[in-house]
Image (cartoon, rainbow, N blue to C red; front, side, top):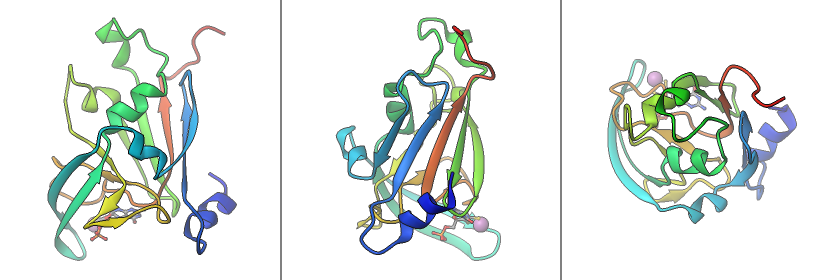
Length: 160
Ligand SMILES: Nc1nc2c(c(=O)[nH]1)N[C@H]1C(S)=C(S)[C@@H](COP(=O)(O)O)O[C@H]1N2
Ligand SMILES: [Mo]
């Protein structure tokens, strides 16, 4: 992600944008207000940070699985095994980066209720950008804030 886009996410008045890229039929650029189009879920989480101790937050937002499914990952949706090689790379505007597997959030496999939060503790994230929320994580390190890109990668480009 370019530095200019990362900077735009924090500029006064600017709405942060999230790029959905990779092996998708419908790559997209989404603002936090675009993310309100999906059903919204609420969750209270506690996680431990190695440096600042236990944190408690309330988040609201769509399921990551709902948003990414609508972007059309290029697997055969009817064949469960075809999804298992896909990974999801999530990047914050500050470069913090973590990987999930598609199977981790897939309702047929890990079923983790991972959110793309549009608010934290009642404060909208329009300017900061959405935050990854993993209610099942004990540690806070994957709760990536200010997400500016999510890349879905099946490891190759089919149909070319
Ligand atoms: N973009 C970004 N998100 C991040 C981090 C980071 O360095 N950059 N640190 C992570 C870590 S290590 C923790 S513990 C939590 C801290 O969340 P808090 O600031 O609400 O306590 O954010 C996570 N999300
Ligand atoms: Mo942390």
